[in-house]
Image (cartoon, rainbow, N blue to C red):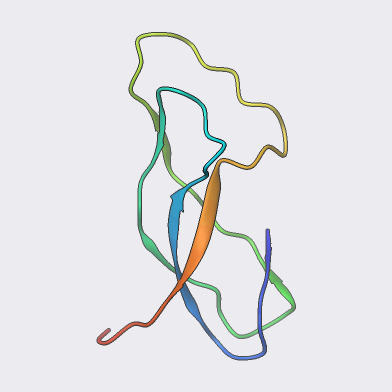
Length: 72
């Protein structure tokens, strides 16, 4: 979940600085919409190691960076 501003904005998902070793985040552009004060952001993660990785509930695995979309 992320708090958003009054107008519609776009962001790019990026791996968190405090990420797990062997765990990656697929970078992609997401739209936060214009309704409500928060938005649910779906993040696709992948495991590049050969080991099982446990992810703690509500842990921060990704960060959002505001982006300007030039074309749809």
